[in-house]
Length: 209
Image 1 (tube, rainbow, N blue to C red):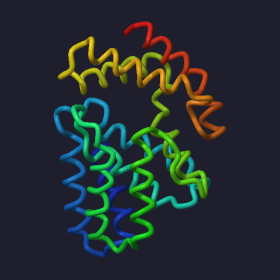
Image 2: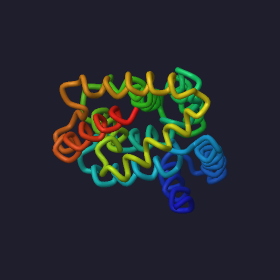
Image 3: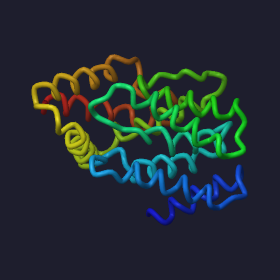
Image 4: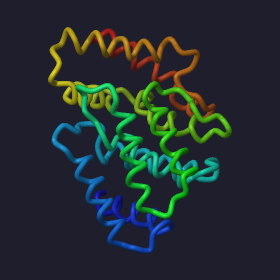
């Protein structure tokens, strides 16, 4: 999988820079970040899942490359003890995209996509790209229970520093945030495919907490 991801990254970057060394440098940095020992869920497998979903939606996405860059960088900074991972990831992306021939408008839109994952709320409404991006990022919530169970165990490992009483309180708050929404997913395709299962999974996890 890692080699395939590297090739996909190189293909994307080649549209904005003719220097393979830049693509390689950025790739090594991405790989290093997403393979840190504390990355049990927010790792390269997560990135791969979103890229696979993005390919299926390519004809639906307006600014496809923006979406791809947002996927690659949206969890580049991840520290379970911090509350500003999305902001730092957006700044990180902006700095790295400067090394490519990407204009400020495109870079700004990529940053906005990344920032939207903080509260999982749409902040770019001129098309459905932001909605699809968030739905892809949240699609794990609607996975079959065995996959969801593996996911929640991985999340707990990422937050291992916190004792159960703190983790359970925070996790329940986050889960209820999704349940309180009219719909967890923003787009009709994701609602049709994942909404019912996601609500079942979340309620089941809350019962386990």
